[in-house]
Image (cartoon, rainbow, N blue to C red; front, side, top):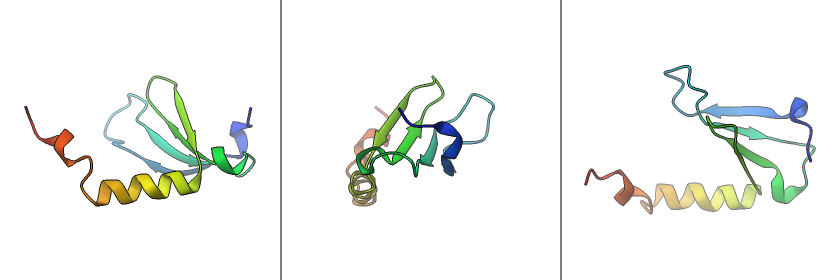
Length: 72
């Protein structure tokens, strides 16, 4: 388990409301494979490596998720 008090906030996604928007954090005390932390508005969290985040960002930039944003 990592200590949340040392986590560095990177970004808040949405931020237009008070629902507890998803946020991106860096936990410098975590092992490399769990350094990146994404929290959601339900109190859950995902931990991943910087390499995994790099892959995710590249996929998003390349349009891998675009189909999800098309209204059905």
